Every structure is written in C-alpha cells, then in structure tokens.
Image 1 (cartoon, rainbow over the protein chains, first blue to last red):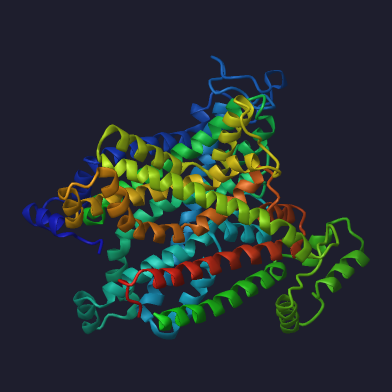
Image 2 (cartoon, each protein chain N blue to C red):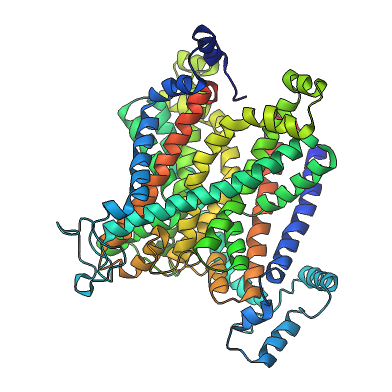
Length: 296
Length: 306
C-alpha cells in the first residue's frame, strides 16, 4: 500500500491545513541522496530547457582544424572529430534526452495505466487475455523488444521514442493492475458502487487517484531507463543518426577515435550516467518519502 | 511443488507460441512492402518478386504462419538474404560465443557482488560500506556500452594490459565479461548487504558467536549460507539484464555473438537473420526464467506454491 501511511496520516490529522505535498516534501528533504539526485536533475533540466542560451557554440558547427582537440579554456570538454564543441553537443543532448524521456514515459503511462486499470477492475476473461499478452511482451528482455520494434518501425530517433515507450507499457499495466486489484476490494469502492457510480467513474475518480503515488515513482525510474535504452539504440546505430547531438550516437561515433581522443568517449557517457543516477536517486527518495515503510 | 512446476511449464507454452508469432509478424507488419524494403530501393522487379516468393509473402497469411511454424519445428529458419547461407548455420556459429560471454558475466557478477556485499555488511555504516555502496550505485547507473568503452580506454589503450577486440584467448574474455557483469554485480552487492545485515542480527548468529567461533566461520558458514537465498532469486531475475548486457557488449567489443548478428541483420535489413536472432534470445530468456523458477521451487522447501 502506498496511500497514506499511519505516520503521515497522524501528521495530517494533527495539522489539517498541511497539504499532502508538504508532508511528503518534509520527508523528502531529510534524504541527502534524494537532494543530490534532485540537484543533478535540476542541472539536467536547466541544460535541456535553456540549451541555446547555455551552449557556448553551435553544436553542429564544424571546425576541421580543431578536430579531436583536448579540453582547453576555449572548449572546456574538448572537440569531436569534426571539431564540434563537445560541451555544446552534450548540452543539446540533454535537451534530446529530456524529450525522449518525456515522450516515452507519456506513451507508457497513456497506454499502460488504462490497460492495467481496466484489466484489474474488470477481471475475468479480459484480465486473462491482457495478462497473457503482457507475458509475451515481457518474454523479451527490454532492450531486445525495443530492437524488435525498431526493426519494424525503421531506424531513427522518433521510432526509438515510440519503441522505448511501447516497451514500458507492460510495466505500467502490471503495476497498476496490482494496485487496482487491492483497491477494488476496499470499502470506499463498495460505497461508490452502492451510490450508483459507473465502472468508468469508479476507476477514474476513486481508484486511479490512489495509484498516483506508485505511478509517479515508477515514472521517475522509467525516464532513466528510457534515456538509457534510447542511448543504447543510438549507440548501436539504430536510433538518432549523425550528426544529431544525441548522447548514444555521439559515443558510437567517438569510439572509432578512442585511441586519439579520450575526452570524446568519456564525457557523453558521463552525462548519461549522471542523468540516470539523478533519476534513480530521486525515484528512490520519492518512494521513501511517500511511504517510509517501503524503504529497503 | 510438482503441481506448481507443471503449471509453470504449461504457462510457458502460450508464451513461446506468442514469441514465435511476434517473430513471424515482425516482417509482415513493416510499413510498406517488406519484400521491396528488404531488396532495397534500387532493386529490380524480378529481385523483389524472388524475395517475396522466397519468404512466402505471396501466400495467404494463415498458410504463411502454418509454414513458418512447421519449418521452425524442423529447425529450418530460412536463408540469410545477404550471405545466402542457411540461417541456422550462422546461429550455431554465434550461439557459443554469447553463451560464453553471458556465463563469464554471471561469474563476475556473483563473485564481485557477493564479496562486496559481505564486506559492506560486516562493517555497516563504515567508510568501506559507504564506499562500496556508492560504487554499486554508480555501477547501476552506468550504461553497459559506456562502461565497456571506459574499460577499453583504461586497460587496453592506456595500460595495454588486455586486448580490446578478438575472441581467441581467455584474456580476450576479461573486459567483455566485466562489462556484462558490472550492473548485475551492483544489484547483487546491494541485495547481499541487506540480506546479510538481517541474518547477522538473528539469534543463531549470536549463539554461534557466544560459543566462541571465529568471526570468519560465523560469517562464511553460518550467516552467508542463509543470506544467499534471496540473492539467488535476484540472480535469477537478473538473467535478462545479463543477456541484454551481452547483446550490447558484443557491439562494443566486436564480439561475434547473437547480439552482434542481430544488429548487423537490422542494419542490413536481413530479416531472416533478425527473426532467428530475436527468437533465440527471447526463447533463451523464457527458458532461463522457467529454469530459475523451477530450481527455486526445488531448492527452498520453506516456500509454498499454489
């Protein structure tokens, strides 16, 4: 159960004016790892949103004389094989990763949550059928399913976003179904049904709001895994194509020059790692704040 | 327990059937004319027709699926469009390499993960513990393909200790195996630590200490054995991560396995190869999961299965 915990509920009763958000925030603030994660993500978000202002150079501007130059005062993170400024490309890469994460998670939530909610609430044959379909999707390791989808949809950045989004649908569907199954048996749902509410209304107004906490935690972690998968596909040459400033594609290019330019294989990967670390720390902290009992 | 195993086996059948259907459908739901896409834009009409016929795309859909399943059961996976060789030949040449890499990755993951977890747990909240857990967290967030590149940069390019590409000797296996096992090692370390911490607080450990046993006996003989049960579950659950890791790692180290074959197949639009590689990896994943579940039911008598 991830709804109100006894500790949180007691606090809410003591101070009825205090909103749920503030209670959770008070819990969250005590978690140092979570705050570090939040700080990393603020930097990532800032880089993504204000890329044109922050980037010192045009990420696509070629300077053949500066090819593979090491970090210097003019180019803090060095230059790639075509002399493009690595820092600028990484900043623009943050923007792309942000878009990938948001779109992929929206697809996952948009399809996975309704599928899981209906499957759990309706039960019976619908549930059985949906669960078997999910079993088949989960029979593929995540990245393999994404590769299969890219094989069908074709190589490219948009296709990767869709593929990574589709891959996360079963995760959401399973998660929400489990939540709905336990909520369905609760008294407030019986009460709503007794008052004559339709199935759709019960799911939308009574059941789903109670699953919001787990969906938020899952989505934070899911953004990280979407960014990782998209970068992996970019690295394999199945995602964003050159000259796009996408982190995975940048690494794929840079590995040919690994003997000549350590910086061009190091920094894009560091950016991926930090972003994923940030989301993981934040996700764990939000989970702990929402429900201290879930802490491992 | 036997009823559980039988049920679990039965549940796997529709999943395998579904996987085969997905693989069958893959080529058919490609937007546009699959034969034209496979042949390429500049191909002659005759060539496109030949491919259509070769793949059976001119037959009714149901018949196509029947033929597909029948040849699948015979072990006939068609011919590669690129090399014209039977796909099964290519597969058999690649499978041992992926198996070798995955197993080596597993060995790295378990040995490093369990050791790190135990070291952390015997001195909880110490500097060593914090350091190990920080490294584990970082290891978890590192993309597999990037950790591979970093290992090449450090151990092959800078230090020159180990080779970066090739499969000939055991030394060639070291960097790819560490790459595959690293993320799973991090997860195993975290699980071992929390499981050990719980066991070390139990009564029988206090008894073992009270009767004067040496600390290493208490830790290795009494605590670790019991703490490893949840760790085994995690190892089972992580087989998918290891397998995906192997698929990605193969591209970094130009390791001639199934993952590399799959990516090459997609880039060359060699669909029979893609279908076969996907089928093999998914089947391996399903069967490994099945084996882990069954083994777990057999090993731990405390767990009841419905």
